[in-house]
Image 1: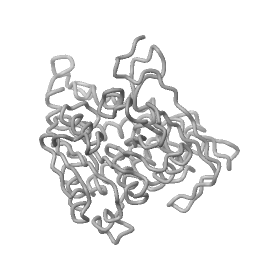
Image 2 (image 1 turned 180 degrees about the vertical axis):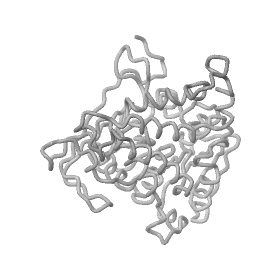
Image 3 (image 1 turned 90 degrees about the vertical axis):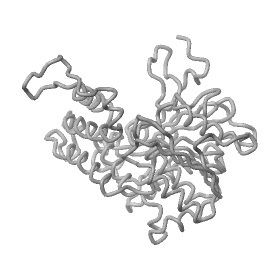
Length: 389
């Protein structure tokens, strides 16, 4: 198979092992851990061109390219990562990883527990936080010999990691890109996460999190959790244009099986997700979302938290994102302005809702490319972007 000219092509994941005990915010310690990583492009001589990609709830290390010649599906952010793309791998060395607690090769609930005869951790895997993830990412940075990232970029939960980096390790990044994110979850968002968790926890096949030992999976719970989540990722306009009130068979069936196209779509998405994602990981990831709040260490003052930062910021929101609305991004921007930090902000007109950050929307791509090009390359500010200092 020949790959597109702007693709990174075939990529091979790498597994990094860390043998030192890892103290977590919850008070527990991981005796050791592994992290799955993919890299694209080349690190320059002075190691100044590295970009870290932080993933969202269901994301992982495979952000761009293909794993084998017949691979029909590229990485989850292939639209933006590659030679000549917004995150240009002909200029930058790009690192994407799978966070611990995940289910794509990094140490998580499905991994063997060395303190329990190498049986799967299951529910015994500790709750991890965004700050814990950032801590492990600094350990990876040290292993790669990267003292300071040119940029750290993330969407949604990934944006929270980028923001935490800027507060906890301000001297280790030059640019921070926070996309479709928030400084902390609203009560409504926590409520959505709780409904998703209860769908899993109440599944008879959950077995108190030890479903692997029972050779089962809380499939129904995962399907419901994904259906609830997916509804919040899409905008009403996107659902209207994609499905409307279209019927699958063209007529009412007067029953409770699938009748509307949107029902069929949600069930399909849930079914696919339940085959590829671990239930305990889903619980951990949603809790990490709930706990995130960089202002917690600064007497609930986001402005004081942002005062710790030293990098340039790009904050991006999308008009139809109601899961993390533009107002939540503006909270970050306002705190940065109050702290006299360099921040650019753009609210992109997009119809895809929260999922917009995954799509190559022209103004979005242009904005990313301009910001990452550095101020010396930025001749004009893209329409819709504002700069504040």
